Length: 207
Image (tube, rainbow, N blue to C red; front, side, top):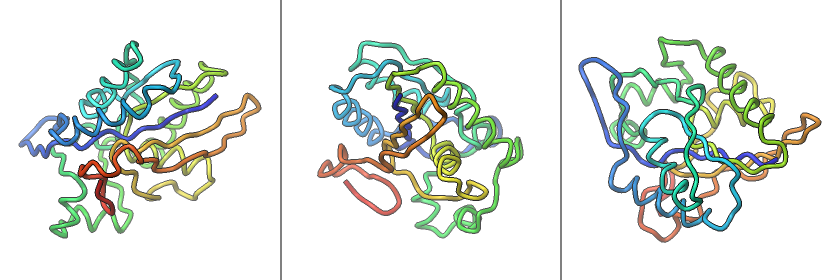
């Protein structure tokens, strides 16, 4: 089977006094999601899953509409900061040399809800469960940068798993999963659908 891990599109900046920020997509993020859906429109997708966070659900919706199917939510592919009261796009943190950016560069774990080991374990278990349920299929899972890092690091055998690399907005990461248990990475950071659109792609590239 083939697993497509897709990072969500660009969200809005949200900073609250309390409660989970859970930002919606920005205007650019909605445009990114439409380009993603157009790009994958002619590929067979047997199922579409998403993290329950708004930025992932809203990214998955145009893709689901293009394939005339529904989006199934999977709580265990939510990001490590799912309960955080603030969400600031990482590009903004980097541009202002925010202390939170420095912490990311240093590889410091930022969640008070679970350890890095617990996060990695729930992500890997959730994705392996979806793989097991879809033998011979191609499925898409719209999720988050940390989730993608955790699973690809697991496949590659990268020690600790975090940090690893930066997935661009709406980037596609393909994994071939054999019934024998073998996992092979086919593509990483596939973003040709954003080229020449003028839309932001991520930390290091523009569309």
